[in-house]
Image 1: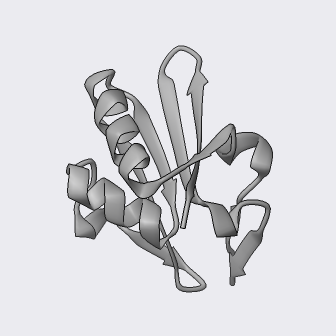
Image 2: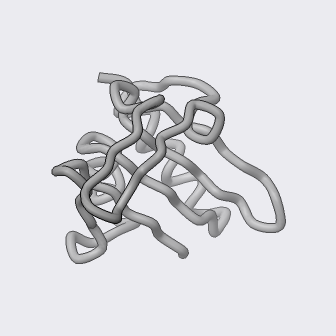
Length: 100
C-alpha cells in the first residue's frame, strides 16, 4: 500500500500523510468527521519506507503532522512522532495530529 503525502509550507510546515486508499473519502461517525480531500493530502504517493524517511526529515524541521490511516499511523509510531495515546478513531479509521 502507498501513502499519500503533501507538505504544506506556511508559517509552520504541516506534513499531511494519509493511506492512499482513503484519499477522497469522507469518514463520519456521529458528530465526528474526517474529510480526506485530495487537495490537502495528496501531492504524491510514496512507499511505506519513503514515508518514514520523509517523516524523519519533517520532524527535524519541527513540522506539524496530520496523519490518517493504519499505515500512516504505524509509520508515525515507528518514527516516534506519536504515541498510542495520541490516536483517535472515527468509524474505525485511526488518525492523529502531532505538534512537535
